[in-house]
Length: 136
Image 1: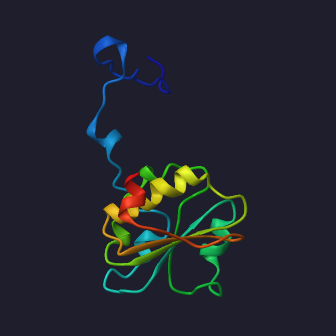
Image 2 (image 1 turned 90 degrees about the horizontal axis):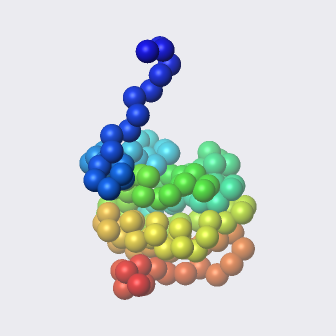
Image 3 (image 1 turned 180 degrees about the vertical axis):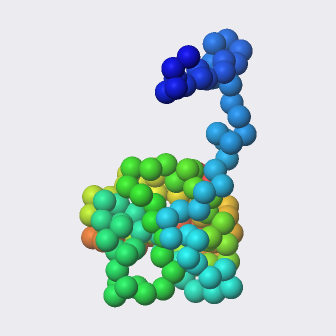
């Protein structure tokens, strides 16, 4: 067997891939999530869109708590417990994520314990997303 050979995935019933618990639930915090102070009860900003990294790295644009949803990445790839107890604003910059991704992210944030979720694209109206809307 060659050194670089990879073991093929295990197959479940009917030829499908076998599902493992680590595939179903992520334990990875979003970028910058490890830098947050869990005792701080301030607003949390989730930077989204193609310009998210630039805004999250800026010490001049909102110097408070910020995390990033990398552009084009499924929000379910991360655990959003960083939102627990915070009011959250999802801020979109550059090319925006599709609204279905924003709705999914908002639902995950609310399920993680966010008190309030607002969506504020760079050019557009601010939208409040509550638990009833996120479930729809």
